[in-house]
Length: 468
Image (cartoon, rainbow, N blue to C red; front, side):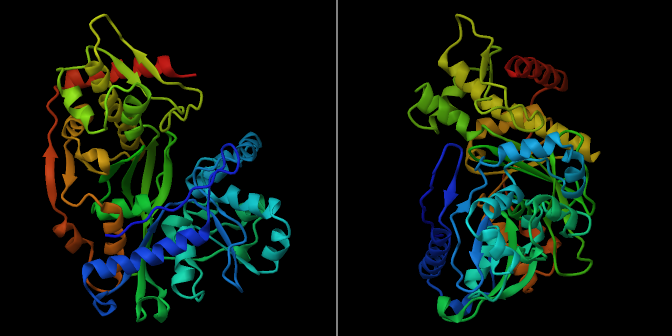
Protein backbone atom coordinates (compact mmCIF):
# COMPACT_ATOMS: atom_id res chain seq x y z
CA UNK A 1 0.00 0.00 0.00
CA UNK A 2 1.13 3.52 -0.78
CA UNK A 3 -1.01 6.63 -0.47
CA UNK A 4 -0.65 10.39 -0.78
CA UNK A 5 -2.98 13.29 -0.09
CA UNK A 6 -3.52 15.99 -2.70
CA UNK A 7 -4.90 19.53 -2.28
CA UNK A 8 -8.60 20.37 -2.36
CA UNK A 9 -9.65 23.74 -3.81
CA UNK A 10 -12.72 25.75 -2.73
CA UNK A 11 -12.89 28.76 -5.08
CA UNK A 12 -16.43 29.81 -4.01
CA UNK A 13 -19.12 28.79 -1.54
CA UNK A 14 -20.34 25.29 -2.41
CA UNK A 15 -17.63 24.79 -5.06
CA UNK A 16 -15.07 21.97 -4.76
CA UNK A 17 -12.28 21.40 -7.29
CA UNK A 18 -9.19 19.24 -7.85
CA UNK A 19 -6.25 19.93 -10.12
CA UNK A 20 -6.30 16.96 -12.56
CA UNK A 21 -2.49 17.09 -12.68
CA UNK A 22 -2.46 16.30 -8.94
CA UNK A 23 -4.75 13.33 -9.50
CA UNK A 24 -2.40 11.92 -12.12
CA UNK A 25 0.92 12.67 -10.38
CA UNK A 26 -0.17 11.16 -7.05
CA UNK A 27 -1.48 8.00 -8.76
CA UNK A 28 1.71 7.57 -10.82
CA UNK A 29 3.85 8.18 -7.73
CA UNK A 30 1.95 5.87 -5.40
CA UNK A 31 1.87 3.10 -8.04
CA UNK A 32 5.66 3.18 -8.26
CA UNK A 33 5.96 3.38 -4.46
CA UNK A 34 3.66 0.37 -3.94
CA UNK A 35 5.71 -1.70 -6.42
CA UNK A 36 8.91 -0.71 -4.59
CA UNK A 37 7.46 -1.47 -1.13
CA UNK A 38 6.28 -4.86 -2.35
CA UNK A 39 9.84 -5.66 -3.42
CA UNK A 40 8.79 -6.84 -6.89
CA UNK A 41 9.45 -5.85 -10.47
CA UNK A 42 6.86 -4.86 -13.06
CA UNK A 43 7.34 -8.33 -14.59
CA UNK A 44 5.40 -9.77 -11.61
CA UNK A 45 2.28 -7.69 -12.32
CA UNK A 46 -0.48 -9.46 -14.26
CA UNK A 47 -2.79 -6.44 -14.62
CA UNK A 48 -3.80 -3.06 -13.25
CA UNK A 49 -7.24 -2.26 -11.81
CA UNK A 50 -8.54 1.28 -11.35
CA UNK A 51 -11.18 2.48 -8.93
CA UNK A 52 -12.07 6.12 -8.47
CA UNK A 53 -14.28 8.71 -6.85
CA UNK A 54 -17.29 8.80 -9.13
CA UNK A 55 -18.98 11.84 -10.73
CA UNK A 56 -15.89 14.10 -10.55
CA UNK A 57 -15.65 15.75 -13.99
CA UNK A 58 -12.44 16.31 -15.98
CA UNK A 59 -12.11 18.05 -19.36
CA UNK A 60 -8.83 18.02 -21.31
CA UNK A 61 -7.22 18.80 -24.67
CA UNK A 62 -6.86 15.72 -26.89
CA UNK A 63 -3.73 17.06 -28.64
CA UNK A 64 -1.72 18.14 -25.60
CA UNK A 65 -3.31 16.02 -22.86
CA UNK A 66 -3.52 19.14 -20.69
CA UNK A 67 -6.67 19.83 -18.61
CA UNK A 68 -8.58 22.92 -19.71
CA UNK A 69 -9.60 23.72 -16.10
CA UNK A 70 -9.72 22.18 -12.64
CA UNK A 71 -11.88 19.09 -12.21
CA UNK A 72 -15.31 19.74 -10.67
CA UNK A 73 -15.61 17.33 -7.72
CA UNK A 74 -18.64 15.18 -6.93
CA UNK A 75 -19.41 17.28 -3.82
CA UNK A 76 -19.59 20.52 -5.83
CA UNK A 77 -23.04 22.20 -5.75
CA UNK A 78 -22.59 25.02 -8.31
CA UNK A 79 -25.18 23.49 -10.68
CA UNK A 80 -27.91 22.99 -8.05
CA UNK A 81 -30.11 25.85 -9.35
CA UNK A 82 -29.94 24.51 -12.91
CA UNK A 83 -30.89 21.04 -11.65
CA UNK A 84 -33.85 22.56 -9.76
CA UNK A 85 -34.97 24.20 -13.02
CA UNK A 86 -34.76 20.84 -14.83
CA UNK A 87 -36.91 19.31 -12.11
CA UNK A 88 -39.50 22.10 -12.34
CA UNK A 89 -39.61 21.65 -16.12
CA UNK A 90 -40.79 18.08 -15.56
CA UNK A 91 -37.70 16.17 -16.72
CA UNK A 92 -37.33 14.13 -13.51
CA UNK A 93 -39.38 11.04 -14.46
CA UNK A 94 -37.76 10.74 -17.91
CA UNK A 95 -34.23 11.10 -16.51
CA UNK A 96 -34.92 8.56 -13.77
CA UNK A 97 -36.45 6.11 -16.26
CA UNK A 98 -33.43 6.31 -18.58
CA UNK A 99 -30.55 6.71 -16.13
CA UNK A 100 -31.86 5.38 -12.80
CA UNK A 101 -30.80 8.65 -11.13
CA UNK A 102 -32.62 11.54 -9.49
CA UNK A 103 -31.82 14.99 -10.89
CA UNK A 104 -29.03 16.36 -8.72
CA UNK A 105 -25.86 18.45 -8.96
CA UNK A 106 -24.02 15.38 -7.60
CA UNK A 107 -23.83 13.75 -11.04
CA UNK A 108 -21.42 14.61 -13.88
CA UNK A 109 -23.80 15.78 -16.62
CA UNK A 110 -24.63 19.18 -15.19
CA UNK A 111 -20.97 19.77 -14.22
CA UNK A 112 -19.85 19.12 -17.79
CA UNK A 113 -22.55 21.42 -19.15
CA UNK A 114 -21.39 24.15 -16.75
CA UNK A 115 -17.84 23.85 -18.10
CA UNK A 116 -19.04 24.11 -21.70
CA UNK A 117 -21.14 27.20 -20.91
CA UNK A 118 -18.79 29.07 -18.56
CA UNK A 119 -15.20 28.42 -19.72
CA UNK A 120 -14.27 30.78 -22.61
CA UNK A 121 -14.10 29.11 -26.03
CA UNK A 122 -14.62 25.61 -24.61
CA UNK A 123 -17.97 24.83 -26.24
CA UNK A 124 -16.67 25.64 -29.73
CA UNK A 125 -13.56 23.51 -29.15
CA UNK A 126 -15.72 20.64 -27.86
CA UNK A 127 -17.93 20.76 -30.95
CA UNK A 128 -14.81 20.61 -33.18
CA UNK A 129 -13.78 17.39 -31.38
CA UNK A 130 -10.66 18.93 -29.82
CA UNK A 131 -11.55 18.10 -26.19
CA UNK A 132 -12.18 14.97 -24.13
CA UNK A 133 -14.43 14.52 -21.09
CA UNK A 134 -14.09 11.84 -18.47
CA UNK A 135 -14.58 10.90 -14.86
CA UNK A 136 -11.35 10.27 -12.94
CA UNK A 137 -11.00 6.72 -14.29
CA UNK A 138 -10.97 8.00 -17.90
CA UNK A 139 -8.39 10.66 -17.03
CA UNK A 140 -6.14 8.01 -15.47
CA UNK A 141 -6.56 5.56 -18.36
CA UNK A 142 -5.69 8.36 -20.82
CA UNK A 143 -2.51 9.22 -18.92
CA UNK A 144 -1.48 5.62 -18.21
CA UNK A 145 -1.74 4.77 -21.91
CA UNK A 146 0.06 7.90 -23.09
CA UNK A 147 -3.13 9.34 -24.58
CA UNK A 148 -3.93 6.30 -26.72
CA UNK A 149 -7.17 5.28 -24.96
CA UNK A 150 -10.23 7.41 -24.14
CA UNK A 151 -12.58 5.04 -22.33
CA UNK A 152 -14.66 4.49 -19.20
CA UNK A 153 -16.57 1.56 -17.78
CA UNK A 154 -20.31 1.03 -17.44
CA UNK A 155 -20.35 1.72 -13.67
CA UNK A 156 -18.79 5.18 -14.02
CA UNK A 157 -20.81 6.00 -17.14
CA UNK A 158 -23.99 5.23 -15.20
CA UNK A 159 -23.19 8.10 -12.77
CA UNK A 160 -23.15 10.87 -15.38
CA UNK A 161 -26.94 11.35 -15.91
CA UNK A 162 -26.15 10.93 -19.65
CA UNK A 163 -26.02 7.11 -19.89
CA UNK A 164 -29.00 4.92 -20.71
CA UNK A 165 -29.19 1.91 -18.37
CA UNK A 166 -31.20 -0.09 -20.90
CA UNK A 167 -29.20 0.46 -24.11
CA UNK A 168 -25.85 0.66 -22.23
CA UNK A 169 -24.89 3.67 -24.36
CA UNK A 170 -24.85 7.45 -24.18
CA UNK A 171 -28.41 8.70 -24.65
CA UNK A 172 -28.86 11.11 -27.58
CA UNK A 173 -32.01 12.64 -26.11
CA UNK A 174 -30.23 13.47 -22.84
CA UNK A 175 -27.14 14.75 -24.67
CA UNK A 176 -29.44 17.16 -26.53
CA UNK A 177 -31.13 18.23 -23.28
CA UNK A 178 -27.74 18.95 -21.66
CA UNK A 179 -26.29 20.37 -24.93
CA UNK A 180 -23.27 18.04 -24.80
CA UNK A 181 -21.49 17.01 -28.04
CA UNK A 182 -21.10 13.23 -28.32
CA UNK A 183 -17.54 13.74 -29.61
CA UNK A 184 -16.48 14.67 -26.06
CA UNK A 185 -17.46 11.34 -24.53
CA UNK A 186 -15.31 8.29 -23.80
CA UNK A 187 -16.01 4.84 -25.22
CA UNK A 188 -17.94 2.75 -22.68
CA UNK A 189 -16.47 -0.70 -21.96
CA UNK A 190 -17.08 -3.60 -19.54
CA UNK A 191 -15.64 -3.11 -16.03
CA UNK A 192 -13.64 -6.33 -16.29
CA UNK A 193 -11.88 -6.34 -19.66
CA UNK A 194 -8.92 -5.00 -21.61
CA UNK A 195 -8.65 -1.19 -21.66
CA UNK A 196 -5.15 -0.86 -23.06
CA UNK A 197 -1.51 -1.05 -21.99
CA UNK A 198 0.48 1.42 -19.95
CA UNK A 199 3.20 3.49 -21.56
CA UNK A 200 6.44 1.50 -21.21
CA UNK A 201 8.27 4.47 -19.66
CA UNK A 202 6.00 4.47 -16.58
CA UNK A 203 6.87 1.10 -15.02
CA UNK A 204 9.61 -0.32 -17.23
CA UNK A 205 7.27 -2.48 -19.28
CA UNK A 206 3.76 -2.24 -20.74
CA UNK A 207 1.15 -3.47 -18.23
CA UNK A 208 -2.45 -4.31 -19.17
CA UNK A 209 -5.21 -2.18 -17.63
CA UNK A 210 -7.94 -4.77 -17.20
CA UNK A 211 -10.38 -3.55 -14.54
CA UNK A 212 -12.18 -0.23 -14.01
CA UNK A 213 -15.09 0.53 -11.65
CA UNK A 214 -16.40 3.39 -9.52
CA UNK A 215 -15.47 3.13 -5.86
CA UNK A 216 -18.78 1.90 -4.43
CA UNK A 217 -19.32 -0.63 -7.21
CA UNK A 218 -15.75 -1.89 -6.79
CA UNK A 219 -16.35 -2.32 -3.06
CA UNK A 220 -19.51 -4.31 -3.79
CA UNK A 221 -17.51 -6.57 -6.12
CA UNK A 222 -14.74 -6.82 -3.50
CA UNK A 223 -17.37 -7.99 -1.00
CA UNK A 224 -18.31 -10.80 -3.44
CA UNK A 225 -21.95 -9.65 -3.62
CA UNK A 226 -22.47 -11.60 -6.82
CA UNK A 227 -26.01 -12.94 -6.33
CA UNK A 228 -29.24 -10.88 -6.46
CA UNK A 229 -30.24 -9.82 -2.95
CA UNK A 230 -26.67 -9.58 -1.62
CA UNK A 231 -25.79 -6.18 -0.20
CA UNK A 232 -22.85 -4.32 1.31
CA UNK A 233 -22.61 -1.14 3.35
CA UNK A 234 -19.48 1.02 3.54
CA UNK A 235 -19.14 3.07 6.75
CA UNK A 236 -17.13 6.22 6.13
CA UNK A 237 -17.96 9.86 6.76
CA UNK A 238 -21.35 8.79 5.41
CA UNK A 239 -22.63 5.38 4.38
CA UNK A 240 -23.07 3.86 0.93
CA UNK A 241 -25.22 0.77 0.60
CA UNK A 242 -25.44 -1.16 -2.66
CA UNK A 243 -27.53 -4.24 -3.36
CA UNK A 244 -27.13 -6.53 -6.35
CA UNK A 245 -30.49 -6.77 -8.16
CA UNK A 246 -29.28 -9.08 -10.94
CA UNK A 247 -29.35 -8.70 -14.72
CA UNK A 248 -32.16 -6.13 -14.84
CA UNK A 249 -32.31 -2.55 -13.59
CA UNK A 250 -34.90 -2.18 -10.83
CA UNK A 251 -36.65 1.22 -10.76
CA UNK A 252 -36.87 2.64 -7.24
CA UNK A 253 -40.15 3.72 -5.67
CA UNK A 254 -38.34 4.87 -2.50
CA UNK A 255 -35.96 7.45 -3.98
CA UNK A 256 -32.96 5.15 -4.16
CA UNK A 257 -30.64 5.20 -7.18
CA UNK A 258 -30.52 2.50 -9.85
CA UNK A 259 -27.00 2.00 -11.16
CA UNK A 260 -24.81 -0.41 -13.10
CA UNK A 261 -22.73 -2.47 -10.69
CA UNK A 262 -20.23 -4.00 -13.13
CA UNK A 263 -19.97 -5.88 -16.39
CA UNK A 264 -17.54 -8.55 -17.56
CA UNK A 265 -16.25 -8.95 -21.11
CA UNK A 266 -16.87 -12.72 -20.77
CA UNK A 267 -20.14 -14.30 -21.95
CA UNK A 268 -22.98 -13.73 -21.27
CA UNK A 269 -21.64 -10.19 -20.64
CA UNK A 270 -24.88 -8.89 -19.16
CA UNK A 271 -24.16 -6.30 -16.48
CA UNK A 272 -25.08 -6.70 -12.84
CA UNK A 273 -27.33 -3.86 -11.71
CA UNK A 274 -27.55 -2.42 -8.21
CA UNK A 275 -29.76 -0.25 -6.06
CA UNK A 276 -27.84 2.38 -4.09
CA UNK A 277 -28.74 4.44 -1.05
CA UNK A 278 -26.61 6.92 0.86
CA UNK A 279 -26.60 8.19 4.45
CA UNK A 280 -24.94 11.59 4.89
CA UNK A 281 -23.83 11.33 8.53
CA UNK A 282 -22.13 8.16 9.79
CA UNK A 283 -18.54 8.64 10.96
CA UNK A 284 -19.24 12.37 10.75
CA UNK A 285 -21.73 11.94 13.63
CA UNK A 286 -18.92 10.63 15.85
CA UNK A 287 -16.69 13.50 14.65
CA UNK A 288 -19.41 15.89 15.86
CA UNK A 289 -19.36 14.28 19.33
CA UNK A 290 -15.58 14.79 19.35
CA UNK A 291 -15.22 18.25 17.77
CA UNK A 292 -18.61 19.90 18.27
CA UNK A 293 -19.66 18.68 21.72
CA UNK A 294 -16.14 17.64 22.86
CA UNK A 295 -17.61 14.59 24.61
CA UNK A 296 -14.70 12.39 23.52
CA UNK A 297 -11.04 13.09 22.71
CA UNK A 298 -10.77 10.60 19.82
CA UNK A 299 -13.28 8.72 17.68
CA UNK A 300 -12.35 5.22 18.98
CA UNK A 301 -13.35 6.31 22.52
CA UNK A 302 -17.02 6.36 21.53
CA UNK A 303 -17.38 2.57 21.71
CA UNK A 304 -16.34 2.25 25.37
CA UNK A 305 -18.39 5.30 26.40
CA UNK A 306 -21.51 4.01 24.62
CA UNK A 307 -21.01 0.52 26.06
CA UNK A 308 -20.95 1.91 29.63
CA UNK A 309 -24.79 2.13 29.59
CA UNK A 310 -27.13 -0.75 28.64
CA UNK A 311 -29.34 1.38 26.36
CA UNK A 312 -29.94 4.99 25.31
CA UNK A 313 -32.56 5.67 27.99
CA UNK A 314 -35.03 6.35 25.15
CA UNK A 315 -32.84 9.15 23.81
CA UNK A 316 -32.67 9.48 19.99
CA UNK A 317 -30.25 11.54 17.92
CA UNK A 318 -31.29 12.26 14.33
CA UNK A 319 -28.03 13.52 12.75
CA UNK A 320 -29.64 15.57 9.98
CA UNK A 321 -26.93 18.23 10.17
CA UNK A 322 -26.91 18.51 6.36
CA UNK A 323 -30.46 17.28 5.79
CA UNK A 324 -31.43 13.63 5.38
CA UNK A 325 -30.34 11.38 2.52
CA UNK A 326 -32.09 8.25 1.26
CA UNK A 327 -34.89 7.41 1.49
CA UNK A 328 -36.08 10.87 2.72
CA UNK A 329 -34.04 13.33 0.61
CA UNK A 330 -35.14 16.14 2.92
CA UNK A 331 -32.67 19.02 2.63
CA UNK A 332 -34.63 21.00 5.21
CA UNK A 333 -34.35 18.42 8.03
CA UNK A 334 -32.02 19.40 10.86
CA UNK A 335 -30.17 17.57 13.62
CA UNK A 336 -32.44 16.73 16.53
CA UNK A 337 -31.84 15.23 19.99
CA UNK A 338 -35.04 14.03 21.68
CA UNK A 339 -36.02 12.15 24.83
CA UNK A 340 -33.69 13.93 27.24
CA UNK A 341 -34.34 13.65 31.00
CA UNK A 342 -32.38 14.62 34.12
CA UNK A 343 -30.98 11.10 34.03
CA UNK A 344 -29.44 11.52 30.56
CA UNK A 345 -25.63 11.39 30.50
CA UNK A 346 -23.03 11.82 27.80
CA UNK A 347 -22.86 8.00 27.62
CA UNK A 348 -26.55 7.88 26.61
CA UNK A 349 -25.94 10.50 23.93
CA UNK A 350 -22.87 8.62 22.65
CA UNK A 351 -24.89 5.42 22.46
CA UNK A 352 -27.73 7.27 20.68
CA UNK A 353 -25.18 8.59 18.14
CA UNK A 354 -23.96 5.08 17.32
CA UNK A 355 -27.52 3.77 17.17
CA UNK A 356 -28.45 6.63 14.82
CA UNK A 357 -25.92 5.34 12.28
CA UNK A 358 -27.42 1.84 12.48
CA UNK A 359 -31.00 3.12 12.27
CA UNK A 360 -30.31 5.28 9.20
CA UNK A 361 -28.78 2.24 7.50
CA UNK A 362 -31.88 0.22 8.44
CA UNK A 363 -34.07 2.79 6.66
CA UNK A 364 -32.08 2.32 3.45
CA UNK A 365 -31.98 -1.47 3.88
CA UNK A 366 -35.76 -1.66 4.23
CA UNK A 367 -36.28 0.63 1.20
CA UNK A 368 -34.03 -1.63 -0.87
CA UNK A 369 -35.88 -4.77 0.13
CA UNK A 370 -39.20 -3.13 -0.77
CA UNK A 371 -37.92 -1.85 -4.14
CA UNK A 372 -36.25 -5.09 -5.21
CA UNK A 373 -38.86 -7.50 -3.85
CA UNK A 374 -35.89 -9.60 -2.69
CA UNK A 375 -35.29 -10.87 0.85
CA UNK A 376 -31.99 -9.57 2.22
CA UNK A 377 -30.44 -12.43 4.17
CA UNK A 378 -27.40 -10.54 5.52
CA UNK A 379 -25.44 -7.28 5.21
CA UNK A 380 -21.73 -7.30 4.42
CA UNK A 381 -19.86 -4.35 5.92
CA UNK A 382 -16.59 -2.48 5.39
CA UNK A 383 -15.05 0.94 6.01
CA UNK A 384 -13.56 2.46 9.14
CA UNK A 385 -16.55 2.21 11.49
CA UNK A 386 -17.10 -1.46 10.61
CA UNK A 387 -14.29 -2.15 13.13
CA UNK A 388 -16.59 -0.91 15.92
CA UNK A 389 -18.04 -4.14 17.38
CA UNK A 390 -20.79 -2.39 19.37
CA UNK A 391 -22.03 -0.54 16.26
CA UNK A 392 -22.01 -3.73 14.21
CA UNK A 393 -24.06 -5.54 16.91
CA UNK A 394 -26.52 -2.64 16.97
CA UNK A 395 -26.71 -2.89 13.18
CA UNK A 396 -27.59 -6.58 13.29
CA UNK A 397 -30.19 -5.93 16.01
CA UNK A 398 -32.09 -3.22 14.11
CA UNK A 399 -31.88 -5.06 10.76
CA UNK A 400 -32.94 -8.44 12.13
CA UNK A 401 -30.37 -10.17 9.89
CA UNK A 402 -26.67 -11.05 10.39
CA UNK A 403 -24.01 -8.42 9.75
CA UNK A 404 -20.82 -9.90 8.28
CA UNK A 405 -17.40 -8.24 8.43
CA UNK A 406 -14.69 -9.62 6.11
CA UNK A 407 -11.04 -10.09 6.98
CA UNK A 408 -10.06 -7.71 4.19
CA UNK A 409 -11.84 -4.41 4.77
CA UNK A 410 -9.97 -2.53 1.97
CA UNK A 411 -12.70 -3.81 -0.30
CA UNK A 412 -12.65 -0.96 -2.84
CA UNK A 413 -9.04 -1.59 -3.89
CA UNK A 414 -9.66 -5.34 -3.67
CA UNK A 415 -12.65 -5.06 -6.03
CA UNK A 416 -10.61 -3.22 -8.66
CA UNK A 417 -7.88 -5.88 -8.41
CA UNK A 418 -10.41 -8.72 -8.68
CA UNK A 419 -12.03 -7.21 -11.79
CA UNK A 420 -8.60 -6.89 -13.41
CA UNK A 421 -7.50 -10.38 -12.39
CA UNK A 422 -10.72 -11.89 -13.70
CA UNK A 423 -10.13 -10.30 -17.12
CA UNK A 424 -6.60 -11.73 -17.49
CA UNK A 425 -7.48 -15.21 -16.23
CA UNK A 426 -6.04 -15.17 -12.69
CA UNK A 427 -9.50 -16.40 -11.65
CA UNK A 428 -11.84 -18.34 -13.87
CA UNK A 429 -15.14 -16.88 -12.65
CA UNK A 430 -16.92 -15.06 -9.84
CA UNK A 431 -17.53 -18.36 -8.06
CA UNK A 432 -13.80 -18.86 -7.54
CA UNK A 433 -13.51 -15.32 -6.14
CA UNK A 434 -16.46 -15.90 -3.78
CA UNK A 435 -14.76 -18.99 -2.37
CA UNK A 436 -11.73 -16.90 -1.42
CA UNK A 437 -13.77 -14.25 0.42
CA UNK A 438 -13.12 -14.72 4.17
CA UNK A 439 -15.17 -13.73 7.22
CA UNK A 440 -13.59 -11.92 10.15
CA UNK A 441 -16.71 -11.85 12.34
CA UNK A 442 -20.42 -12.48 11.98
CA UNK A 443 -22.80 -10.47 14.21
CA UNK A 444 -26.12 -12.27 14.80
CA UNK A 445 -29.21 -10.24 15.79
CA UNK A 446 -30.03 -10.51 19.50
CA UNK A 447 -33.10 -8.28 19.67
CA UNK A 448 -36.52 -9.96 19.67
CA UNK A 449 -38.62 -9.11 16.61
CA UNK A 450 -41.25 -7.23 18.62
CA UNK A 451 -38.60 -5.10 20.33
CA UNK A 452 -36.89 -4.45 17.00
CA UNK A 453 -40.11 -3.20 15.40
CA UNK A 454 -40.84 -1.01 18.42
CA UNK A 455 -37.36 0.52 18.19
CA UNK A 456 -37.80 1.30 14.49
CA UNK A 457 -41.22 2.86 15.13
CA UNK A 458 -39.74 5.04 17.87
CA UNK A 459 -36.97 6.09 15.48
CA UNK A 460 -39.57 7.12 12.89
CA UNK A 461 -41.18 9.39 15.50
CA UNK A 462 -37.80 11.02 16.12
CA UNK A 463 -37.18 11.44 12.37
CA UNK A 464 -40.60 13.09 11.99
CA UNK A 465 -39.54 15.69 14.56
CA UNK A 466 -36.34 16.43 12.62
CA UNK A 467 -38.04 16.86 9.23
CA UNK A 468 -38.90 20.12 7.42
